Length: 527
Image (tube, helix red, strand yellow):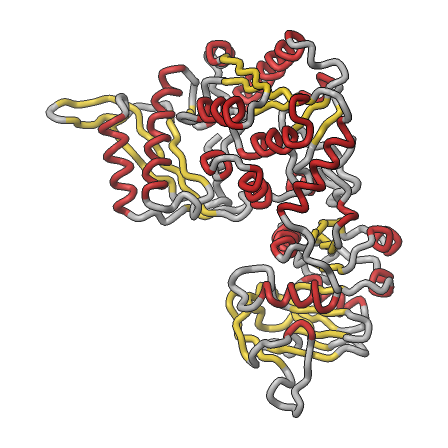
């Protein structure tokens, strides 16, 4: 299976993953500076790292102590391959320890916003310089999260920053181009954090800022054409952002060779089916097969209440319908299957490196069932990059900025048995939530905002009559990557409008609640 494209045409930086999602955030920040980043496991050998051809290496933070029994380590020969290295938090401590410095558990760890002081900025004339801190003031605020601390620098290193409690908050060996910072420059709370990363990328590593939306599209189009040749390509459209961008990108590459299959399950959000039809058949003139299969899906879900059984029933029926469409249109033989695998899927599949990943299947079972070669033009991209590329390709904002939506759709937002009436009730309530969040100008500030229907009934009063109707739970969260999420502090006035409209406009609802659970301990979705 071919990858999206050969990233060798771009300067790259390797981000070594020591756990806890730090590596993904660092990789995204590097790409925001228009440099291609690739996450690699900490078990990567020096020979493998050299073969990767990276112009720089960043060691991520991690959740463990460098002295823990199973602490992740780095091949120490990597420091000698001549590639600049920047260690961040755990990565800085590991670099210091492996090169002969000292790391210890001090009495006071540092957590959260912390004042940082550069060493030598005001004390020497002329002041000492560091490529990482060029232009920085003597004092600034950074974000710390550590219990262990670097207490002595290795031979050949000089200390460039400290805090009130930590004598070694940054260190460097300029001759070997080895650097370490105890704080997290990748988080927004660190003043000048992105500036520090850019200094490392451009002033230390000499990277070119060539990773742009236009260059990525050009590379992906070339790769799809080279992979597919004159063959047909099938793409399963779900109505979500990823599949929509895949379809638009593949269509740009091969035009009429693409056939999109849109299976309408009856479990989508309000107006989504019409939007898919309008965009791909109308705007892009794509060969679109629209299968209206709501009755079949509701029949398959009859009596099913277990969330995993719902997913299984929907996934299996989707595969059968996709098979039927391919057979009816004689598309399966010799065709390719395009799907929206993203870079986080790649990393979470277990390999870490884009060069050696296992395939991650968005549409459960389709590749195995069909035996088709996959076309995955987004597999090196993060979600925010996918949205930007969608905009560049001309997809409407209603699709590009659509909030994440589970594959089984409304079925897993109905806590209980799924019926057509309940799906319609939830769809109407959900549309009000999205409409009011949009009107309030918060659509891009929240990661997801939606309605949930628990299949229970409670007593209420409407007018002079008692009611016995469903509750609707509103769920709204903020997040950067969906790995963790916090409940959104929506204004009370907004919640009041949503509640009033749902009860007034959606028959069968007499109560509205707001979920204020973060992830963890909860999940974003209810099922």
